Amino acid sequence: MTHKAGFVNILGKPNVGKSTIMNALVGENLSIITHKAQTTRHRIQGIVNHEDYQIVFSDTPGILKAAYKLHNKMMQFVETAFTDADILIVVFEANEKLRDEELLQKIKSVECPVFILINKIDISTQEKLEEEVAFYKEQLNPDEIIPLSAKEKFNTDTVLRKIIEYLPESPPYFPKDALTDKSQRFFVSEIIREKILLYYSKEIPYSVEVIIDTYTEEETIDKIRAVIYVTRESQKGIIIGHKGEALKRVGTSARIDMEKFLGKKVFLELFVKVHENWRDDEQQLKRFGYTE
Ligand code: GDP
Ligand code: MG
Image (cartoon, rainbow, N blue to C red; front, side, top):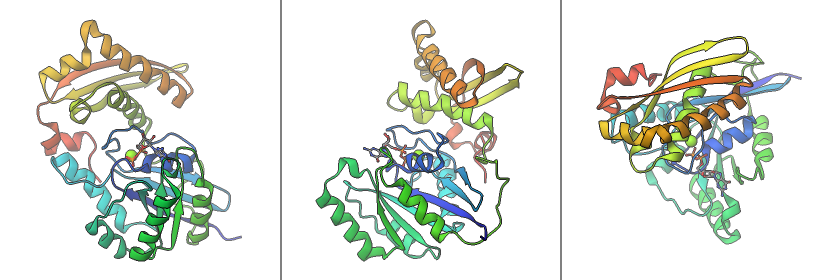
């Protein structure tokens, strides 16, 4: 049998379940998932390897209007994802009648096969679902329309089967034991950011960036020093909390998840620093890894 391989890019509005879908298809928690919009800031590749095929998924930030330079960088990842796919997956929510003319036009202009995924059917009705399927069929006439629930892993196997069907013949792009393009450092910093998204409210999660200062691998333990950057002194106080309790909670739960992810003991130290406008500072964004 000939070998198949290709790039499958997952796009859509914030919170529709893009990261949940990629994690379900890859079978690993590569992308952090929370109920908050803008959880995913980078383009994250997840690779599925099989003797006969290799699928390189890209999870992307949700499509939004930019308010900071940070958002511009995020939307550049999205723009590229529209153009460099072998198969484009656009995700919508079954119970949310979203009619975004600009997005529809963009999807129409794509030349590769397009799959429309209607997600979260577990919290929708048959009637709404049928309405959405009819709408996208009529508007976009995509190659495939697949309703699913990524959370309950319902119909995710169909998505995978269809992808393999459409995948072009090609040798693999990455070694067959590769799971992602991102480093251990990246995933470790994302685990900390996920806890901050979960434990703090209002503008805090959106003001935070996490940088791994040092990462020392020893035989039985990984020693990690991370810096949490915020934009204001007052946010620093909130992150740390009374007697350091809030930060301690972040550290403990992040460490537990890191140990699961790495399969190894972790010693984690967290520091909080203020960098006033990192979201609009070109140099700082570069240092934080927002480049293609
Ligand atoms: P993204 O912003 O598009 O990457 O969305 P996420 O994958 O981060 O998911 C956003 C929220 O939707 C999270 O709270 C998920 O648990 C939830 N979610 C994702 N898929 C489903 C689904 O199939 N059903 C339901 N009910 N919730 C889902
Ligand atoms: Mg996401």
